[in-house]
Image (cartoon, rainbow, N blue to C red):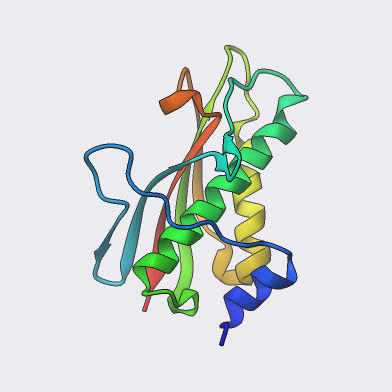
Length: 154
């Protein structure tokens, strides 16, 4: 039987991806007390990576979609860490978003809203979180966005 979070995702027409395996020498998540630290999740869809450097106002929506994909991967990692039960997620504590940005691009917060908005819609008040949105010159494999998260779990 699906829990409340899985039911909400299904109502939104969202299917979580499988939790991505690490691409290098690190673990996808670590639990410390009641906190779950999830490694950075890169922007990818089932059909491939979402790549590119964001540089103009027309790129914000593309970046939001990339951040949305990162949030789905974060939730997939939380689900894996919680033995498949997303209802063990108590709250999103903090996200740190990295946006591949061209010189002069300053709407990183608008891009990372793609993740924040999704988590708020799925989790309600438990999805509200602290956050940083940082512009960087490049990200692994040329992706547009990478987001890491800290979550409170049972």
